[in-house]
Amino acid sequence: MALSNGTPLADGKGPATYSTDELTRTKLEMEAFLADSGKLEKTREFLAQKDELSDEQMKTLKIFERTFGCYIMESDVARDKREESMKLEVIHILVHIVIT
Image (cartoon, rainbow, N blue to C red; front, side, top):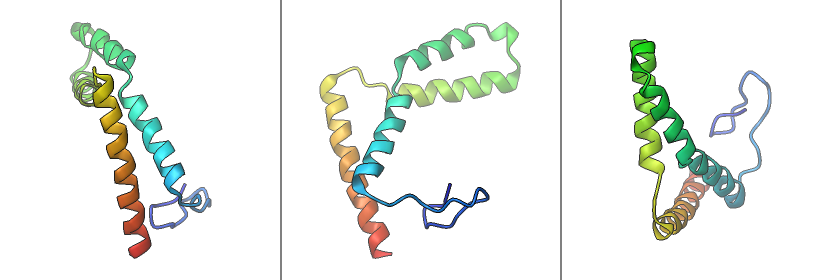
């Protein structure tokens, strides 16, 4: 792994080649993970077992619930618009990287 500025981390690996396609792919992959309704459902199942959970587990699960809830979009139109906006975000990020 490497930092966004290309600095290699402890594993010694440098950065992957920066590209709009790769950044878009990984961002869409992350968004799909966060928008998985099954993950929200499972989180809520765990939260329903509140008597068996520690305060720390409850706190963490509530963060998961809020996070997943923010990314789940019910409408196909909303998902399409989000994907379009993410592509624009990627272009903006890459332009910033090139400029700096």
